[in-house]
Length: 296
Image (tube, rainbow, N blue to C red; front, side):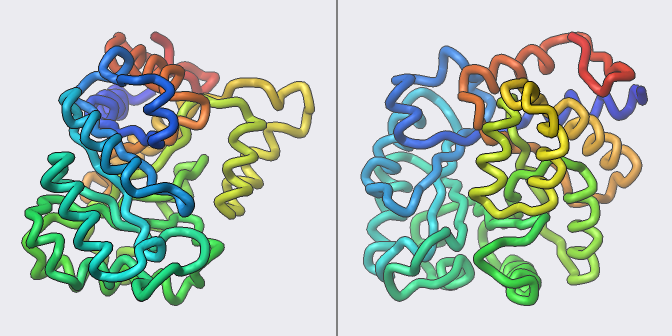
C-alpha cells in the first residue's frame, strides 16, 4: 500500500462524476438526498430518447444545484437546425454550460455523422458552453475502426488548439487499469494533449457487468470479467472497482504528467448503491488491503 497513491485515490473520489438516464431520475425524483452536490451528473441521450426528456431532466438537476452535463449523440440529431434548438434549450432553459458530445450508437438519422462535425459548427460558442467532453475508447469501438478512432483523436486535438472552450476525453468503461495505460501510450504517439476522465463501472453484480460489456462490445473487459464468473455461483456476487481505482491512482502517482486526472462512474448497479459506496470511501480513513479491497 502506497500512501501517496491513497492520497490520489481521495483526490480522484472528491471530484468524481456519475451518469444517469432520464428514466432513472424520474424513478428517484431527486438526487440531492443520495449524491453530494459537488459531483457532476451526466445525462445519457439514448437513440430512442425524446430529447425533451433530456432537457427537462437537466433542468431539474440544475435546480437541485448539480453541475449537469447532458450527452449529445451526433448521429441521433437530424440536422443543424435541430442541433441549434437542442443546444439552445440545454443552455438557456436548463442552465448547462457543459456537454458531452459522442458519435452515438445505431443508425445515422440525419445529416450529422460525427462529433467533430458538431464541434466545427459555431453553436457551442454561440450558446456559451465552457467545457465539452468527447468520447474516448480505451478498448476500441464496435462501430468505428481503429484508424478512424485515431484520426478522430488527432482532429479533436487540432480543433482544441483554437477552441474558446475546454475539450477533454471521457472514456467508455473498462475493468483493468492496463486498458487505460496502454491506450494513453498510444494517444501520446498521436500527440494527444486532451485531459482524460476515465469511465469505471460502479458496484454491480458480475452478471450485470457482463451484460453491459457485451452490449458495448468491449472485448478485453468482457474477457476479464467473464473469468470471474467461471463459477456460476459468482454471477450474483457484487463486484466493486477497488483494485481498478487503486491501480489508476498508482499509475497517476508513478506518471504525474499523465493526462488522466478524473473518474466517471457508470451506475450499472443503481445510483443509490454506487453513490453510497463511493461516499463511504470518500469520507473514511482509507486503507487498501492484500485482498485488493479498500478498508473503511
